[in-house]
Image (cartoon, rainbow, N blue to C red):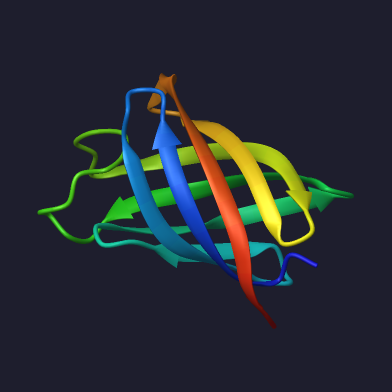
Length: 110
């Protein structure tokens, strides 16, 4: 159900907006990126509920994260999947006062 390529839109409680892609693998791994950062982590599913932890790492020093100036961080997320769309929210462990909201759309299945 979740395995495949997803496009994602990020918004934060401090006003940041970003777009990227994420691949969910069958074994619980997730990987993706955007113009400035790549993401690597893991997820678990329980029916239509998803939780996960993702490491966010800068690869392009000219880009600024939706969290502001960030070299790397650990993002904890949780949310729901409904068909080919997903809505999750989370926080960086390094900055728990800033929330991120993510809307994802499944583009391709494996």
